[in-house]
Amino acid sequence: MNVLLIGSGGREHALAWKIAQSPRLKHLVCAPGNPGIAAVCDIRGVAVTDVEGLVALAHEIAADLVVVGPEAALEAGIADRLAEEGIACFGPTAAAAKLETSKAFSKAFAARHGLPTAAHGTFEDAAVAKAALDGFTPPYVIKADGLAAGKGVVIARDRAEAEAAIDDMLGGRFGAAGARVVIEDFMAGEEASLFALCDGKTAMIFGGAQDHKRAYDGDTGPNTGGMGAYAPAPVLTDFVIRQARTRMIDPTVRGMAAEGAPYKGVLYAGLMIEHGASRLVEFNARFGDPECQILMLRLQSDFLPYLHAAATGRLASLSAPAWSDDAVICVVLAAKGYPDAPEKGSEIEGAEQDFGPDVAVFHAGTARREDGALIAAGGRVLNVCARGATLAEARAAAYAAVDRIDWPGGFHRTDIGWRGL
Ligand code: GLY
Image: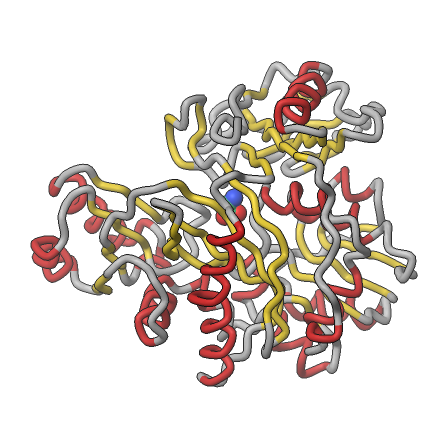
């Protein structure tokens, strides 16, 4: 099978690493990729939102399957165009991806289909939104409607903070993505990420993990895309997974089909778990990053048949995948200044050495300097992942590998996995 993978982060490096192990793979190309991905497969400099460029590349390599990593490509309509071209695509159409790309759509969908989630209101006018705060109690959850690179959610402790967030978002901070805001009830509990492959008609649970969204130890500091993750997460019990499947994931697949936007690809349910039961925080239309890196290290089955079956409506013909019993942990190394103003260009040494069979170092925001040196080129830069018989062993292996990387321009959390331990 010829496969085109779209994306350039740690998630896509992990996807490429796993897809490249498939005996069914003939040729893998990633666009635009990164230096780590370039060590696994061919990379081509086509941007994730250059839909026509990607379609042309899919034709050029005679792709049997296109696997979409990031939500920006979905929102740009890559799956729609590939469907017109008759090329199988793992990833939802722009209309189906609205489960992630529009919080207003997603919350209204949840309400229409009775999914357990926080009560909400959607507003376009700042004065109306502020008045509506009367119907909520602090802390207030204020979300920009559209994609905002992980910065579109504010948990406001008091009314003044909530009003400032409303003014900020509706005042144009996120452009069109902030033309509407959603205000929600705050949900207490512990968050976890659950993944399901979907083929438009059916869903298959495909692992879970818990990530750490705050920048600093002890879950403090600003929100980020994720500073590390681990699995298995004790909070994702069999009961929680079964309940999320029957009350959120299956009704979503049925509901999207009934509404004329069948959902294909991976559905990522962000869960809030309290007293052993879960509610939906949000859906995403892609694998989590860095949760995907964990899944790829734990997945024992050949991944390619699952991706292809989801893209072609044949998931029901496959049995559930095999997962390793190992615990896996991923520590994100970020550039100093992340998430607000990551410093770019600092040199990284030791990231490309052989760390042995239980460690994988995935590249996220890296670039190659003219002299061949590896440098930081983004906020989250490297993902150091390790497996072990227990979470404690995985964690020790991951941090031992982190210590072997010499990067004065970076920082990382030292407590990834603490909830699991
Ligand atoms: N790690 C959270 C996300 O991918 O959105």
